[in-house]
Length: 130
Image (cartoon, rainbow, N blue to C red; front, side, top):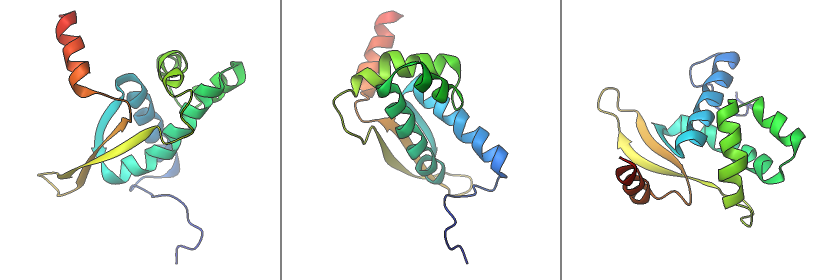
C-alpha cells in the first residue's frame, strides 16, 4: 500500500529523480516552456511554483535557496525577469498542456509553460533578432 507516499518515482532513485527535476526546472526558467512527459510535468510543477515564489520574495537568502535547485544563470533569469512578471499574481504561475501520446512508447506528452508565455511573440522576436 502507498499510504502517505508522496510523489512519483519516475523509475529513478531519489538522487537521480532530484537531479532530473532540478535540470528540468533550469530548462523551464531558461526557455519558459518545455516539452516532457505528463508525469514529469506534474512532478515539476510544484517545484517550479515554489521557486517562482522565492523569486517574488527576493533577497539574498531566497536567491541562495533557489540556487540549491537551479543553475546560476537560471536563478538570475528567475529573479530578474520571470518573478517580477508575476508580482501581483497570488499563485498558479505554470500550466500543463497535454499533447497526446508519443509515437515510440505511447507515453503521454505535455508542455509545461508559464501562463503568460506567448509562443507566437517569442517566434517573432527571434525572427527580428536574426
